[in-house]
Length: 481
Ligand code: C2O
Ligand code: CU
Ligand code: CU
Image (cartoon, rainbow, N blue to C red; front, side):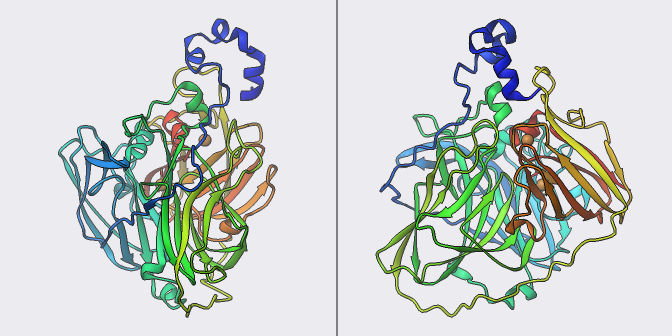
């Protein structure tokens, strides 16, 4: 049964009788989304930029003090000197050697989301690093330039650890990308967008109710790179922004407050074949977008916001509000040397699929325990291998959400795929889906097909990147052998 039908069938007054404590504790507010309380004129915090490190810098997961709201020092989790982690910047063809240390009081690990690495380095939920233990991470970078990221991947605590602050960017560069002369240095800015629910003392609260496991956990405060109500001073020229939606569940439909066009130049795992001019861009949990914004049409003193624009409602609550994310303030006049290339980096079409696997993604309201979110009727079981794939095979995987009414950003480890089709729902392939992907939004009523070649042996997971859904069991194992 669909969630909305289920709720209707209960009727508000009968919830307590029919569903018992679980649903009742969610209160009578059926709209599980929380409004971001972002108001005008208050973007007074300079955007923090995570420190850049190389592929041999140690990484420490720890509980650490930070200040999310001015003057309120709180404990968060992070990989460095506060919330989030440093940005790795490495070259294609190089070797990564990272000493990872878990200094927290709970187990964790590191998953390299978007990087195609050997299974034993992927941060499979089984690969746990216990408190005060270390793990040496080594893998070669054999993929095109792009924006990946890293975060813990312990089943049932992934969402909580990411919410508390464990996430960072991992940028791969290549000579082909360099040749494009894209804006770089202080003109290339990471934007890790996350919504948080904060307590009055300014610390991060993570305690989803059953309703919020269904919709995903949403916060009323939007942070960018851990900065609340951020601004960035810009010059009158092109900037490159590497956007990561590092939220548990919230989907952003990015746009500029003046309605101007901007350009998508990269997707999750690489640069697009050509720049795509857009007015808005949807980024769901786990997805990245490499974008170029031209501030040269503005005058010094003017400002423009990156906003979330409303979109046709998806799931219980997604898309209902418009709000500001970051304020770009034009501070100085500069002449721009950047010229938009007409083509970028070719993305050879993957062909020759030898098999199509179908995955129905559902939410089973009646399964009050043991996970409501299922793939092909199953909740995650670490001891079960759900799919076996031949090493080197090219396959088509179809995610079918045609009977569902929540949005599911589906993510596959160990590969970069290409989106082949989207049937039903939004019925199109979007500009940011015309390149290398590892996460694809499967909205209600949609069936999305992706194609990929499996070039890493071993056991990996694929799952919904709505992190509450994933932790609830919307995840399966596949083994390549
Ligand atoms: Cu971003 Cu399986 O994760
Ligand atoms: Cu991943
Ligand atoms: Cu989901």
